Length: 164
Image 1 (cartoon, rainbow, N blue to C red):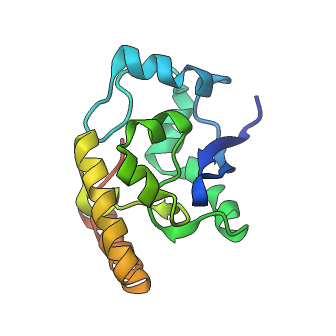
Image 2 (tube, rainbow, N blue to C red):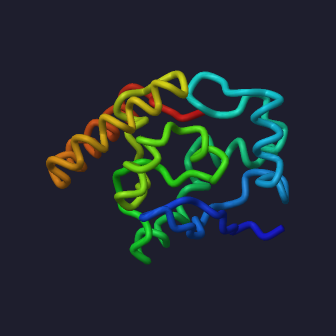
């Protein structure tokens, strides 16, 4: 019931770690994720359609990314980095193909995902976007993260990019 919550996510080397967030869903919503996904599927942008678990104040927190700010603690603790693929719940991680699963866990997850650079609409486009980022990151980590950071910043600021 706490306002600050810790959610299990898949991180570096496939290890589970706790991601800090502000609560935007009703308590125990994490346990309903797979059921709601199967019942409602996904809307454009990769979020669950008609997700009744999100509270009214949660919609506001999500709109302005306020719920994400506690993840800065994960960055400070060294569990995450600024740019990279987002840490996923076990359920969403299992939706990815095996090659992408293996590539995702080779690096720390990130706060700013490739989503805000490529603006994919479907789950397959999201996976393709992340795969492309990971290939570029493997060749040139610093250059890739700087490029993605500034493009994401531009897309959010000037194109109104949002994850819904």
